Amino acid sequence: MNSRERFLAACRGRPTDRPPVWIMRQAGRYLPEYRELRKEHSFWELMRTPDLALELVMQPLRRFGMDAAILFSDILIVLDAMGAKVTYDKGGPRVHPRVCDPDQLGFLAPVDVRQSFDYIREIIERLCAELHPDTAVIGFSGAPFTLASYLVDPGPDGDLSNLRKLADGRPEVYREILERISRVIVDLLKLQIDAGADVVQIFDTWAGKLSLADYRKLALPFSRSVIEDLSDTGVPVLLYVRNAAELSQAAASTGCDVLSIDSSLTLSRARELLGPRVALQGNLSPEILLESHQVIRQKVQTAIDSLEGRGLIVNLGQGLTPTSPVEGVSTFVKAVKEWAK
Image (cartoon, rainbow, N blue to C red; front, top):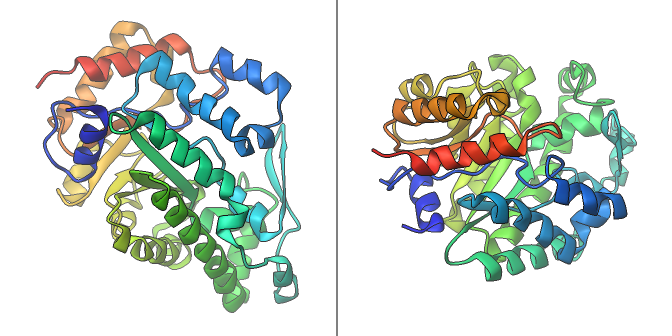
């Protein structure tokens, strides 16, 4: 099996010679070669310049040989295309203006996806030309709820109080915002699929701040709608929800093919809860990369053994950080490749 065959088989719960492996944020700040490029270019330049974005995608593959490459981009390109101003500060990304009432919906303009995201199409097409048929290519977007959290609250690092108040006090405005965002997400993901992406991942990072009841009300219907609108593509959809322990069964009901979970839920418990229909991705803590090579290998092997290596894409439960050690990443990927049934 080559990497692409292995990755697609795992997404569909089919037997593989070993589980595939990739890592969220595998292209980025922990790599010295990324930091060298970052000295010369803004984050927006890196995302929007196909030559630079392609180079960044390839950097971790050259070092570590993951089974899949993921588009180098950011979830907030959706809000930028809709007319919001997105800035990347030391404290994290911020979106202006914030939307709190119907009068502010006017600036959320319809998006000509092919025009606004032509650079995304080019990057995906060039990635597929470079990597197919051997390596899988992953496209992605943020989920409607997570993108709305950036648009309505000062930042999703808080308690999302503004978003909750809007949903409770002006449910029609809340629904309109998320439906507008959802339409752009669907079009963006279909553009990536048309360009050749093998799978797409939807990041609902901030849905994990919700109770189960609030998740069912505020986030799940919109994620389900997006995934249903992608069903005719035949491409597997991965859904990532941070702090998924309480939300896992509801998240799986969106119709996703793969549920990506973090370390709040063990793989074996997730399999008990969800059954065999949904493949799993995750879920090791990024902190294991700081451990010795022996400990990393042992924890990776134990995680894979818990599912007997089937219906699993090995990944961390969260993305790599600027302090993630390169040596730990190398050991992590090698441990998966060395696993034997």
